[in-house]
Image 1 (spheres, rainbow, N blue to C red):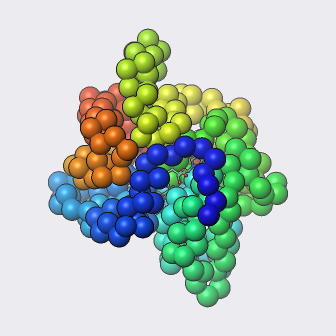
Image 2: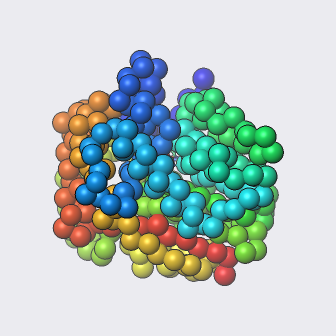
Image 3: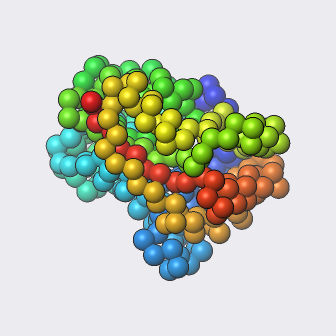
Length: 281
Ligand SMILES: C[S@@+](CC[C@H](N)C(=O)[O-])C[C@H]1O[C@@H](n2cnc3c(N)ncnc32)[C@H](O)[C@@H]1O
């Protein structure tokens, strides 16, 4: 089995729970490992089944932001267990679908879960988001669903996404985006909480504001197409995640604390959940 070259403690535990047949973890995280999206948040029922449907809806929104359609070559970077590509494989025809993940263990499950439908191709490759093993101008669409904060550098990922996109192609991603960057406040959060965040998630960087995203895109030769603020629609995620994260965390109290901090920062408007889409300038 391929070992992960970067520590992703939450995935170690999710993989363990999946192996042990934990039914709730399998429903909630067996296909998608990210927040959910509800068109009508008041109707979320707090169940893992409802969460799984909402997670698929969120991934679908990112694909929609990239304008995915029949006959395209699509790359999903940080593809987890392949949930986003599974949905595209199911809904579109004549597709050449590629998933990249730094963690080969996740790809074993992705390959099992996403057999190509007739007329489609599906490939999963172990690689780093910042060193994509693909030719220049070879994809119509690049996606990154709630994964970019793990990548070794957003600037390097943007350069790679731009390189592999064809003229007229699209990059769409979802991320937790601070409304403003107040370095002194963020340094304080980092000193207090970064160690426990790292013990749960491994390396992550949530300091990229929307303004910084614009700058990154410009530097990489990409143009922002659309910013969608879907924060309100993601809020029911926390009710499900608070208890669930305890089951897949090496340090349950710390993990719940991390989720509560993210929830609090979001409720007071410090953090937003955005879907951003770009095309070559
Ligand atoms: C929060 S999960 C999201 C998974 C997936 N996008 C989904 O929709 O379920 C973050 C993903 O990024 C992957 N990842 C982390 N660092 C990476 C890197 N440097 N290159 C490629 N993938 C990476 C992790 O292994 C994990 O699958």
